Length: 91
Image (tube, rainbow, N blue to C red; front, side, top):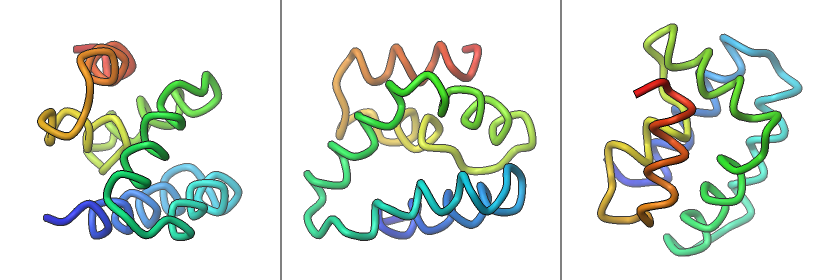
């Protein structure tokens, strides 16, 4: 699934499971055009301590989180990104 589709799904799941405020902050991804800009947005966001709890909660409910996107597409991300995503999701 293309990265934009995964981010749309993540935003929808965030709205449903966490709330509109978190989903609206996540919606900033839509301002980026290229895949590299989207990757950079994900990298920046998963490093934010406030977002780690959201990723964990989404994963707990079996929903799409930024961290699950990183783990599903390791070829797009750095080893550090993968470590952070794995740690956030308790893997």
